[in-house]
Image (cartoon, rainbow, N blue to C red; front, top):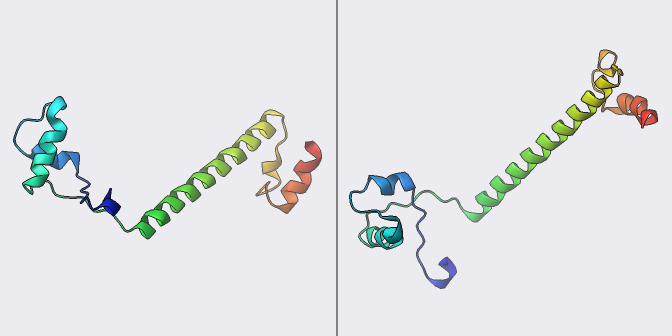
Length: 106
C-alpha cells in the first residue's frame, strides 16, 4: 500500500489494548483507524527491505541446517537399529571415510 501513497503503521496489539476505549470485534478496525488518526497508535520498528531479506535468508539457512541434522540423526538411528555401530569407530560417519563405509550398505 505504501507505493500508492498510504502511510502504513505496524502496530503492536499490546499497545492498542492499553489504550482506553471500546474494542468490540465488529468495530475494531474502525476504532484502530480512529486511534491512528488521533496519533494514539505508535508504530513498531520495521527494518529496511535489505535487512528483511537477510533475516529471511538467515531463517531459511537455519531451517536447512535443522533438516540436515534431522536426516543425519535418522541415518544414525537406522544404522543403530540394524546393529551397525559405526559411531564407535568413526567420529563422523558423514565425512569421506564414513561415506566410503556406508555406500556399500545401500
